[in-house]
Length: 621
Image (cartoon, rainbow, N blue to C red; front, side, top):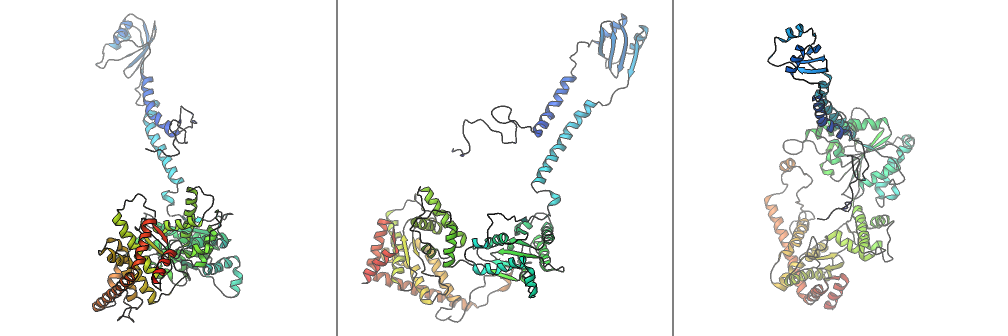
């Protein structure tokens, strides 16, 4: 078994501050808890040892009687069954027998012995200590545990207190200049900062700043980053909290925390409250079968009241972020609570260049780095994914012990992020290699020969986490509207792998599973959403996917008939069948190019898109 790096065999133990080390090179530290445990077990034994009669003045009762008869005893003190006295030989102690001695008093009087008696003691200080010691120790342990819970913020009496953290501005704080892209969002947000700095200027125009601003967008697009920039720019108290921090196992805690949060913000007004992941507490009330979560709904009700209730709240601005606006309660989104909704989408190509330049700071880049080419090859990447791309390339450069990050490393990191790790230990037979090579060659040749497809970047048969081979296409520029010719050629490229398998081997394989899934999904969208079918050109029959709650889906039902559904299925089959037939004709015409690309893949495992384009162009003449 491999030991962790911070464990070294043979080293002497070191004190971590929790337990004392009486031996070795560890530094001794007093621990009252261990001392209490030791006392609990040692004190009774010590007391018993001390109470044992080890003195030499104890005598037998028979000898005591003999000494009295001889006149050697002058005085005795009787306590319960203990007899202490003085004799010619000194003090002595003996014990009155349990069976009694009625003649003892006459014997003492006849020999002129002075007798003193003391009442029996029901308790002693020693017995009190022995009885109270375990109880005191348990009380002390309980106080220690209670103090520890209090230090960790788990005090049951303060469970409803405000858990929001107050932002403290430092030199490393994020500013608007550190946020690349998102120009429209920054412009809208800048108004909030300007209002907090000079509210009189807005008041003179009769303008009121929005009380609530909702940031909406996919994960990783920069919603929280914008909030950090506001915290860094604004000169007012900034409270930030996650929506899940309001919820607790105790009833009423969420509403109490909301009240305390807004109370603290109002005391320090003007101020800003940022609630991240608002959907965790702001879900639609009463959605689904059987009602909703009562504690969450009470928390939401309290938040609605604080945002815009009976008491006006003009001094506190609420900023919230979510990537699920479709499940938020309508009362939360109305004007007066969240007056402004800012959508933060995926960055465009120009924005990706700016984001890459910011994240490339403090990273040694080689001279061949082209930010525009990297941005062009990363469509659909969010800001977080672009940061991860450069970080992965820096890790690869460190692993290979090179001084600078090259373009080759960035492209390798992009493949790793998009397609997963290489499966180097995977054993593939020669027949499987041929099938994979021709499958990917079918995609590549179709992409190079068709006129309305995205440029081909490369094709590889190196197995990765998500596929045994990959054909990579990237658009030249951002595209927001797709025409039918482009989508039809896209279907042909997706079906190129299955077509090549049937053309060369005459048999289908499971390798086309994902291609068929994507082709079916695209064909369904063309028919049901974009009106590109032959008979359903002006009808959209897509099911509404915005209602994610079970109860609403059951109550809503379909908006089209069973006959329409059958017609939709027929249209989808027609689109796929025509695209497959056209792909078969195309690959039959370019069979020589298909064979050349497949042979190159078997030998080199990866070839560039330019090389595939050259082979197809030569065959086409």
